[in-house]
Image (cartoon, rainbow, N blue to C red):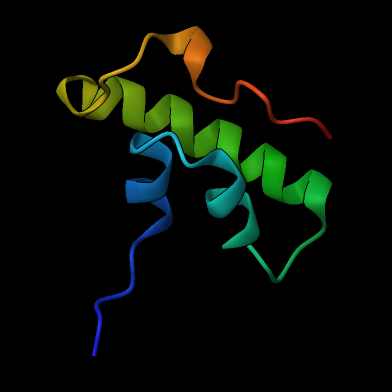
Length: 63
């Protein structure tokens, strides 16, 4: 059995689309809003976990 990856871990790994899709219980707009809140919180709380510059997270994500 594989361990489920948390949305926070997907965000840190720059897997934005997977993170948004993980928020299945809400609309895409609500998921994007949630992603932004979580991303900003994670950048503040776990800056060393982020390997890409800020502008690279969310690149090639079109809504």
